[in-house]
Length: 418
Ligand SMILES: *Cc1c(COP(=O)(O)O)cnc(C)c1O
Image (cartoon, rainbow, N blue to C red; front, side, top):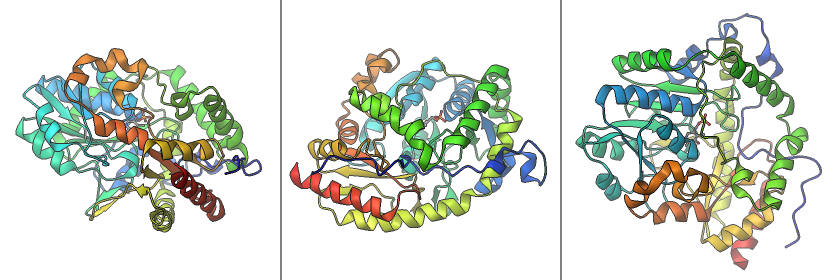
């Protein structure tokens, strides 16, 4: 197979970000949406009474954990052994204890038996995670959590717009949160949304936020400038500069963690999300439903195409679930064929990448936060296999059919050769 070259100077983003419009940035109030009520726009989109806005998905989790800890006094948080490292950092930030649970084989869901063993009367919360836009089995987690009196927090950071039986994810558990970070769809550069069915709990979450989340001018200024930069650079002609070049540098020095941006700072900024960025997000919400529809239709066609490749599985939803499709998450037959495919495709400018590089205990920098007890709580072979055999194919509408065909051909060759 010939070495891959970026298709001229165009770069496909690794996820389907909602394309930004300059009009979103207007500082002037106009229509109701333009007056900038991000919480209202998000609540209307989700069909709920209230949405709480925070400065990131991680901050949303910190607020939720703090509020729930105040209610129950318990301190163990059970999370999937394969998830975003920020989840582990949020638990540590709150001074709570992390406990890892393996995934079921080839799935984003918890291994049910291990989850049962991980839960006891110290368990504050269980965190089923709607990874990659897929809809996790919250009912199974709820049954096990309820049996020990623990809360359920749905991590829907990657799944804004995902539904199950027509209802948005995030509302079956006690608390749900979404991320508005760059790369996760609709973005305020960084941002987060919290939902909760129960009105009393919503008041607790709002009160906790008022107590622990300050206004910080420096952070708001920084994020506002970053959001402007994003608007300037988020287009195929400039993403090579903003995303592709640093990616290829990280790959050349053999640093996959930096290549996907998994190297997070343990210091989690907590601050309110300013008025101007809220108005930008509120305007963007108006375009989200149509954009998600386009992405879902494209994913359906491309799933069918990928299914014809032997040794490649697309991680999909169960019946009744309609997830979102920021990218297609592919499981390859084994690590060797996954790595062969990545050698050819990662860094080629085609939007092929990886989700999180490791299971949580395998990030060196997370050692102080994941700790020993997490490893003792059970072996995590499925989480590690998931990290070792998966890759992602962008579902950005900017990935043209011809480029997608190129990816399919190279995947097929890689699996056949390995
Ligand atoms: C991104 C992410 C988070 C954290 O959200 P931020 O907005 O980036 O802070 C949490 N959980 C998962 C699964 C994520 O992908």
